[in-house]
Amino acid sequence: MGSKDLKLKNNLRRCRFEHNEISQQALANAVGVTRLTIHSIEKGKFNPSVLLALKIASYFDKSVEEIFYIEKD
Amino acid sequence: MKRLLKISNNTTLVLCSISIAGLVFTNTFFLMLRDKIINIGDVESFMGKFSIPVAVVYFIFIFFHLSAMLTLILQLNFFKRDNLLRAFLFFIGITSLMMLFGDFALSSDISKEYVFGLPGEFNILFFSQSLHFIFYILMIVLLASTRKSVVKGGEEIVLKDDSIFINAQYIGILSGVSGLVLVSIFSLIYLTVYPVYPLPLWAAKAGIIITSLIAIIPYILIVFYWLIIKLKERIIEWYDEKQYQDITKASLVTLIASIIIMTVIFIIQYFVSAFDFINITWFPFYIFLVLLLFSSSTLYFSKKTTS
Image (tube, rainbow over all chains, first blue to last red; front, side, top):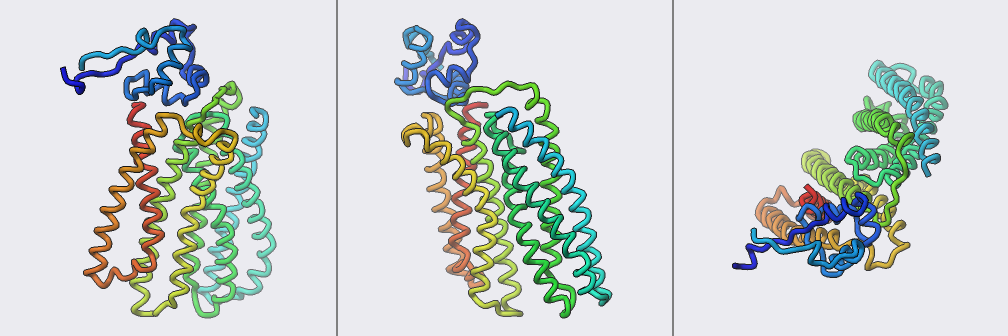
């Protein structure tokens, strides 16, 4: 399996839902990025840095792997 | 903030309505003046009679423009969402404000040159009046469309704003396109007029500088405004990581595309003598080209990842 076939996916939308349907803007404010960045991560169009992934995971009190995972394309 | 925006919106709406009536008055005045010059009427007494009312109307125009600019900046802060109409209005509003001062200079030229026949300045004057009209009408459209949201909507807390970033790209595109068009039109006029009436080089250079300033000032102002907001933050926090990625890609596109386009122009200029005018216009052309390439590619990468 080549690295080209791998894609970073996430459960961010579900996490927001489980977290009292917190808005993208509120999450963006909490982790120090713009709303567009959160939106792009959620849509799978932008891969966050390790630091941002850790910040998001920490915000939801979960491990990074519980939110972000790799899937074969 | 919300209260200030409501006051500003209402003040702008009132001033805008008065300004539209004022525009009808100034247009009628300029049309009558044009007829007087064509029919060799008593131009001096006509201008003397209407100069004070026209000046008063122009002061109202200036107040309206300043109020509209304040409203647009307050709306940028309040809504926290990019809006093409708002960005376009910011651009056309600044241009229209600069053209108000241009109208004074054109009127003064007309009052001196009418003895030699119908001055060509009337064409620029009516173009300027059309620009004011478009701005006034679109401002009413924006104020009407955002009225409900201002009254009902709550203020959203945004720690890292992306609307200014996106709006700056819209204004960059508008500045880039209008700059390229103005520089090209100016070059074309220079090319066609020069063989018949050789313009002094200083006049050509002054013309290029003025047209370039008209096109670039809206972009400089929005970047200056963005910079004022960003001064509160550390330089490393000016962009978030996705914005960094977008501007990095956009910079690469700009570098490659600008080298290719400028090389093609250099080769054409080298072999075609008619393109010699590029010696005076290449710098503003390059600036507007880079601005257009950078802003459009940044906007493309920003929007691509969110679609």
